[in-house]
Image (cartoon, rainbow, N blue to C red):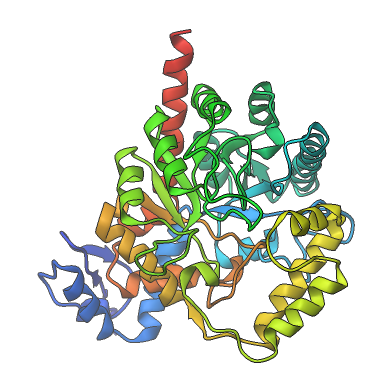
Length: 445
């Protein structure tokens, strides 16, 4: 019997791509527009689209720029390689979902401007740095920490998972600019300038009720020092959580590309944490990248079902967390142990199962990617989930489901080259550029 060789034609916006996956020959030749590609994709059986997406996903270097960790990360009983671990991002789930690289975020909340509060946040941050190092040491056969963009590529080629370190909220810097370098030396490669509240660096997009809408109208004088020092060291400036004025001020000041490590597009869902088109264009002009978040509330406006708010209030009372997002709630959260915070967040997430809101899907998330591509191009968008601090997206609620993003991108007509950029290529380009700018700055001093 003669064996027939089947070559499948996979569409591209400007050329054909040939892959060894049967039967995709159904695609029409000459497809050039996104809408044509999307129509063509709809004619292909779901199983074949998934097979195509699986191959693309396996070949890509996939990166997520934001996963929150707690103090018990990697502790006894918190085995990152175990399938029983409930965290949204674990080494096991990364392997299962084909997620190659993760930025583990050293998170601290915004406190008051006292020395004692700064020191408490500094201590918490150092605990989290230690946790990341502990996981990497315990699972050295599975994962390695990357300290430079080229490390990510090298580690990935070795077959290991890649751990990167970000810092969510510059509050632990306190008023000591030398701490920026200290955090860099510990492996931090981006700092989210603030969080849910104005800090000593800049204004927040979501100040609590006990803070004014603006404090600085952008960056503080100390915040300007922080941005310059981050440029000098080679740390990415992250404007997720910053107010619009602070975002634009940081971009105007920075000599290197700026990132938003976990944000959405406000044109798709109006939320103070999302970026409007003017901010998107400013990030493009900085040569930066917007990493699209997978936190349901940022992706789509939802209505709470009966019973959910009462159940949420009950959990808050159990842990002594008052209503709202003001200073009292922040202090109550800070008073909890790391283990208590983790359990509190897990119980809040469980409400999505017990009291499901209107669904938020992978398709809704990719709508944000589509809009950002439309406004600033495919070279300026990536993935930054905010897992273990959020979630709720059906089909992409932990690292094991990462393939579903690739499948949806294939359905919408994105090419393999474009998907490579979205999943990690754009972020690596920015990281390398930030390193290059740092070398230039250092060479002139």
